[in-house]
Amino acid sequence: MLSRLLALIFLLIGVALLQAGCQAPGDLAAATAQQGPGEVPGRGDVAPDFVMPLLDGGAVQLSQYRGRPVVLYFWATWCGSCTFDLPIIDAAARDLAGTGVVILTVNVGQSQAEVQKFVDAGAYDLPFGLDGNMEIGRAYRLLGFPSTYFVDAAGRIQHVRVGPISRDSFVERVKLLQ
Image 1 (cartoon, rainbow, N blue to C red):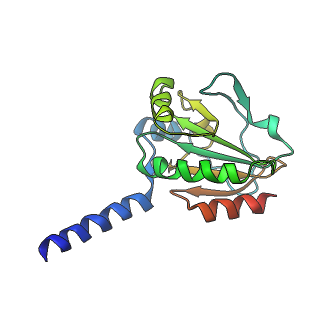
Image 2: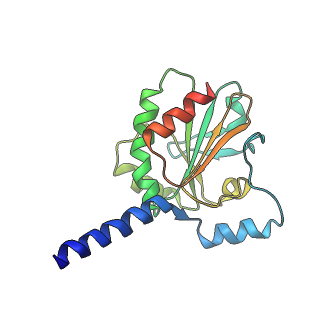
């Protein structure tokens, strides 16, 4: 009986941690705080533009996708919620192929080698962007991981989700952009 109770307690703690998402690393939080007063980009704001190197080579600029809805998924390999979400987002991206929606993952604060090791362990079709110096994360004033920004075809943020996201919720939010 006691072992079942302990197992239930640990399960509930694990679920609570997963639902809570992951905090931004101290260096990102400190860098964001050093920017001074300002608001987190939110609904109706123009999404801050950026140029980002891709894990598989090349680079992408957010503004090159004007005219198409874009989902930005900010994550880190050490974030349990992120590693849980990525296969869900990858599967949703396959389902949304051909719809014109662009899904970009943005790894924040980690080296290319760290991200490559993580990606090699999975079978992902998503493009993996690298924000090793955290400039993009600072521009979006991230509060935690994962953070998902749903950007419409005009380049305006329509929804921000901080924390894990279900497949149904992800697909529903994408459909609202179309």
